[in-house]
Length: 154
Image 1 (cartoon, rainbow, N blue to C red):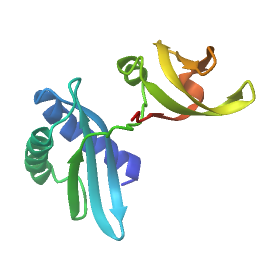
Image 2 (image 1 turned 180 degrees about the horizontal axis):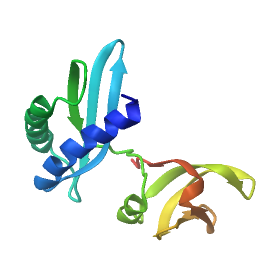
Image 3 (image 1 turned 90 degrees about the vertical axis):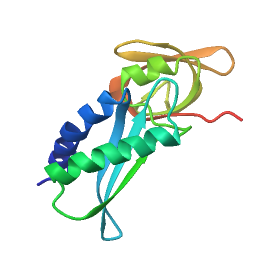
Image 4 (image 1 turned 120 degrees about the vertical axis):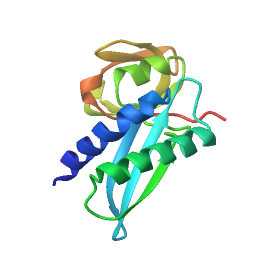
C-alpha cells in the first residue's frame, strides 16, 4: 500500500473518533523513522489543545487502530498539537488566525519575491492578504503557497 493510500485509510478510521471528542484532525504522518514505524497525529480546537486532550485522543484512537489494524507494521503512536509555529494549510487556517503574523513561501514570485512575513489582514476562499512592513500589502492566492506558518512573536 502506498504512503498516501495508507494515510487516507488511517485518516478515515481516526478522524470520526477525534471529531466525536470535539476536536479536529489537523494533520497526520504515517511512515518510518530510523527503521521504526511511526504514526504522528496532530489535533486542534479553537481554544487550543491540552495534554489531557492528547492523552484522551491517544487512548481512543489506539483502541480503534488495534481493532481495525490498518498499518501493516508495528509503530509508535504520537498525538500532539500543531505547535505555536503551526503550519497553515487550508483557507480555514488562515481565517482562524486573522491578525496573526505569518511566514509564507510561494512557488511563484510576487513583485519578484517568494518569501513574505506579515499579519493576515483578510483571508478569503481563494487568497490571503498580508499586511507587510512599511504599510505595504500583498495578496497571495492559496494555490501558489508552498509553505505557510504562524510566526512566533515574543
